[in-house]
Image (tube, rainbow, N blue to C red; front, side, top):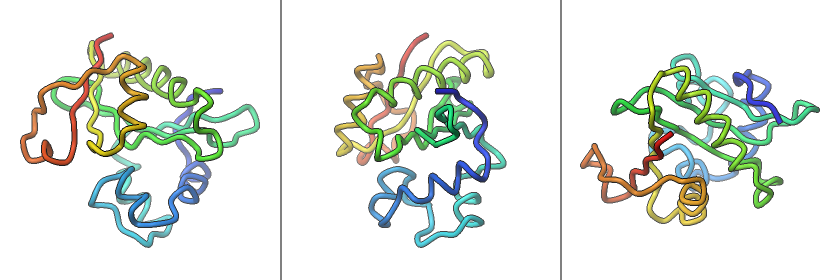
Length: 153
């Protein structure tokens, strides 16, 4: 597996992973339009503003996707998702490892942070397994629906 900058071909594969508004909102939050097309998906993804990365197989198949940017003085991870056909196979750990490594180095910081919906227990467990811990949220308006998690380098 290799972490590369996401191209439109990756984004087109990513779009096929979300078959309902609920699935999309669970992943991307409430400000993502549904139904979507490539133009609206790219716009809501902020693909031209945020570093979007694809974890791809040697054959070019998208295994996972994630973004990072600077927020609260940390490398903030966002919109992390594993290909539904590859869940439960350790791909989340590969994505987190590669994305954290790249983001920490690129942004020259020592910690990663992320928000996750409180009811997304499988994601919370994956993040905890990787070393993230629940931390006090710097944004109080998100606290009722999300937990904020931090991992030190």
